[in-house]
Length: 156
Image 1 (cartoon, rainbow, N blue to C red):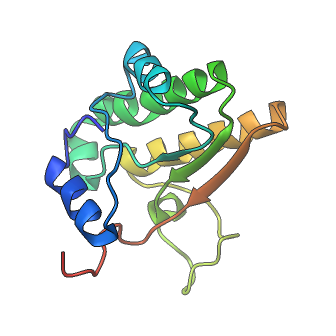
Image 2 (cartoon, helix red, strand yellow):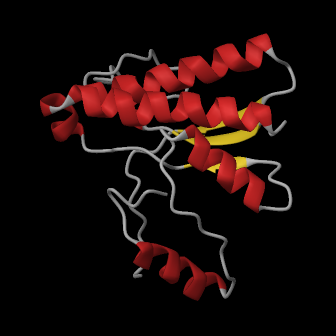
């Protein structure tokens, strides 16, 4: 995490809740060399849970380029470095905003994809890139999670 829209305190809270020490590296997904240092510093990384990304819809409308730069470019760099280290297992944190203005409720996973903001489009572009990656290389395994609200209900 580069902690640009989060806090190291969240790591402390997760450690308190789980009773486990986490291995944390401050790095930016847009910096491929920093990602390589993370992969070099661990025994073996066999899978990645990709939670990094800017996430404010309103801000993305005002500053679309920083969303494409951070979210899309960062994800491309992450996947490239993962492939260099033969790590081809990824869980990607997307968003239900990729459904755009839903035509029905509840929204089914098969619902038409059509983002209405740069934030949503950045997530949709990444999803499409990951589908293309899996189609090109069957060794890749990707799970995409789509949240309606990424904020949890735990009192912490």
